[in-house]
Amino acid sequence: MADEHDPALPADPALPAGPTGSADEVRDTLPDELDITGFVGPYQFPDNSRRRVPGYLYLGIAALCFVAWFATRNGDPVLVNGGTLAAGIVLTLAGVVCITSGWRMMVDEKEALVLATRTVAFPVGHASAQLGWRGLRSRPTWRILCYSAEEPPLQRGFVLIDAIDETIVDAIIEDNPEDWAELPV
Image (cartoon, rainbow, N blue to C red; front, side):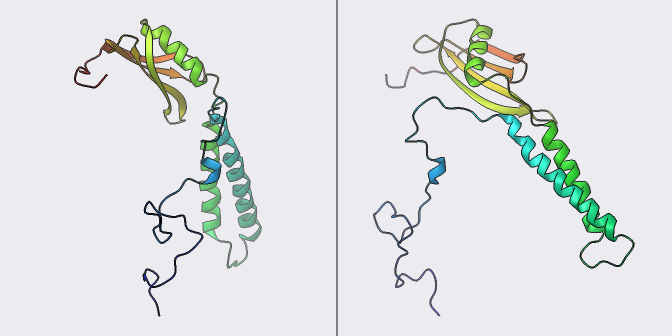
């Protein structure tokens, strides 16, 4: 029996060629549906409320578990037992968490950048936005890192903005401690 890593075996033509050009080297590639190199237009960040869909699916499957357990609880079932009841309880809890953490975001990244610019009170040059979640119910929160417009930046700010009601959760504004003098211009 031949080993699957035997170099004497022919290379699979379905595998992409590696950096050296041979098809027997395996390398990671991004699936076509995730490749955005050909995408033209503004990027739309997915809404957090999509979490509700699996929540409703979990509740539906939990209901089926409860019905199956209830219908066979007086007999001596082989496939439906206490584990089915436990699965129904766990799926109910998971469904409730998914539904209650599926917040509809009212603030997109552009609005969050504008709010952060107003909060730091200095002209912003470079800025970066990242979506994070806080709390037990995973409330979406924008994390904005921004630098002042001077070259090199003299100040920086970090602002947390609630993505649901536009409130500023926290803001840290300080002189830029980074030394950029040695970087090439």
